[in-house]
Length: 489
Ligand code: SF4
Image (cartoon, rainbow, N blue to C red; front, side, top):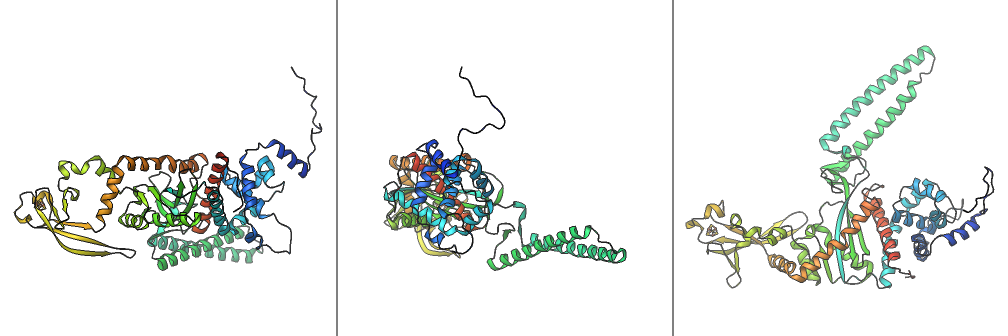
């Protein structure tokens, strides 16, 4: 057995480090295919002049943006995103020390850098996508779109409607009045005894907290009125109420959208406050095209994106889409063919020659008129067909509650039919099936392996940059896995 050297408390270390010698040492011990090397290579290719321009030549030297960007990218790739933890890693972790070149920024410097460069961080996400694009790894020929909900950094208890805030405000006003009375009594007592009461300071602090809360509630009420919101969260006013992270509870959170290539790169990422995915297909396709400067040819997304408007958009753009509608599963399983659904509109046969429908009893429903429906955000047209022989029909009570059966068919119904047929074909089934093996594991990894089930930052602007940092982290890891060498764009 090998002998060890005698140990004593003040034993001299084998190597005495200076920052320079430590970096030389790190170069030799960090494996050549380690993530921190890829992060460094990519960050050194990015143009940080826009950030550098924000600094003044006067005052103390600060850390170069490339160092702090490396720190953030590597931190977000490995699940370390709290500025305090990042600052601590700059002292205790080889990889962070290597990336920061032995500088040790404090947590305030890191969080201010992140907060002050939100737009630049979002741009670096695009720059990194373009690096992959230039290398031919992020062709948008075929893309997958999906969304996931992440909790906001806010308590659900602080979400209230107008009545809730008004009640809270009146309680605080009562409390403030009581605190003022108590303060006055203490003042009088101090005048009489000529002694300072230690309770006065605690009272002042409590009063200032209550006044701050009061101002916040008043501001929230004002925003609710101006933006016609029904509910708002006092801590993060942009967070919307949605089911987040597979939970059944409705919490303040954000809807995070991503576009992924077949190779698993995230090409486009966006954070929205709309809980519904339906309106996100078009902006995500557009963002993917803008980021890569290429046209999308094929896409697959889940039923959350299924809508007539989206089918119309895909058709107009000439994109081969595989997007089921919300009733596709029932349609596929034959649910509508069951006897109890005999009079469901899908069982009415369309006759193109006469522009009419034939009901399951073989009676005709003739075209009556086209009705336009409008909401604040959209407008759509329905063709209305009316039964011609319903008055004498023995099955009328099973078919309709009215005197005559009416069919309201969206004029874009043929698009839905074509989509369903495509998804039922062997090729369509396979193409749609691949979606769950490509995009869903990415969200699974971010949420369950790296632990991003919630945001640290607050407000849509900050949260949006934070999601992009998570996606940058994923893309850098993907780059390493595929052995890609970055190039200047
Ligand atoms: S009520 Fe009219 S549409 Fe319905 S089954 Fe009878 S004839 Fe056909």
